[in-house]
Structures are given as C-alpha cells and as structure tokens.
Amino acid sequence: MKSLVRPKKYRSYKGQTGRVAPDLLQRQFTAERMHQKWVTDVTEFNIAGQKLFLSPVMDLHNGEIVAFETARRPVFSLVKNMLDKALDQLCNAERPILHSDQGWQYQMPAWGQMLESRNIAQSMSRKGNCLDNAAMESFFATLKSEFFYPNHFDSIESLRDGVEDYIRYYNNDRIRLKLKGLSPVQYRTQPLNQPSQ
Image (cartoon, rainbow, N blue to C red; front, side):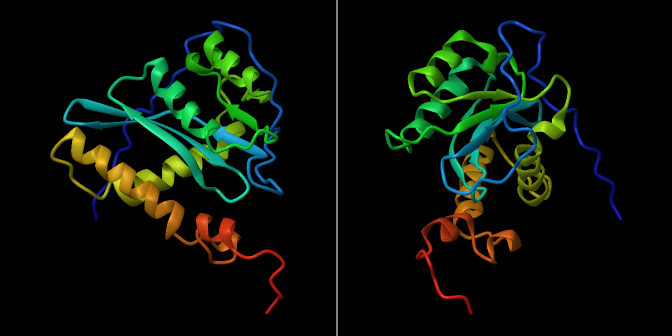
C-alpha cells in the first residue's frame, strides 16, 4: 500500500476587495434545464515546482463543463477568457445564475461588469465555506483522483493536454448514475419525452 499526501489547496481568497454577492444558490445543486445554474472555481496543479491553473464553469443541470481555460498563473485573464467562452454558449434569453467562491478574481469590477452586461446574476459562497460550492469541488476531486494523481507528467504542456483530454472524456464518455447511466453530453442531447422502459 502507498499513501498519497494531498498537496496544499490553492486558495484565491485575499480578503474582501470589493462588493460580495449574496449566496443565491443556497446549496441547491440541481437545475431543471441547461443554462439555469452555473458554478465556477479555480484549481491548481503542481509538477516539479511548476504550476498550471484550471478555471472551468459547470452547468448544474447535467454536470457538463461548458467552458474552461488553463494558464500558468492565476491572473484575471484566466477567468475572463473562461467566462467569454461560456457566454458564447448562451442564447440571448438565457441568464444563468453564476456561483463562485469569494476569490479575488470574482470580486473584480470587470467580472461583475461582464455578468451585468448579460443580465447574469452573480452568486458567491460564504467566506471560508467550501460546501457552498460543493459541486465544483467534487469535480476537482474527481479530476485529480482519476487523472492527475495516478499519472506522471513530463511537462506542463503534457499536463495541460491531458486536462483537456480528460474534460472531453468527462463530458462525452464518463457515465453518471444520476444521469441515468449517460454522460453529460448524452444526457443533454437525448430525445425529449422518450417513453419509459
């Protein structure tokens, strides 16, 4: 048997730097339709002293990662580029709640302005309460236990490519019991009103 010691978790909270949004999600991690509730966060990977940061956004209807971005440093452009990609998935009438922790990136005026420009409600976890964003934390735990910890990476580039491949697998092929044994994309694209078996 071999023990694995988890490295220190990346935390983006640096004190209250701007207005703090209310917790609109209230740990209600289910959604009746796509683009109703989104959650986001940032996690880090460390190999041989080099770091890679991942910023995804997840749809709570089916657990699909609708957009993501990676970067070598946890700068604002990491979350901005991710949000740009996510917003491109929306129709004009779609206005999801977007929930995050109180990371400094999500307290930036530019972040709030991006959301306001699309009439998207900003929601934030309470300070120091990871359970308020448990759905995103669960994805990070699955990603690291299934992909990151069991593998060896020769470079940050190979890690980044692997993260991208894993997210494609997670969305398209990895089945979930709560989705009736379908992957997130299969669940989203299944014909509506199928007769029950």
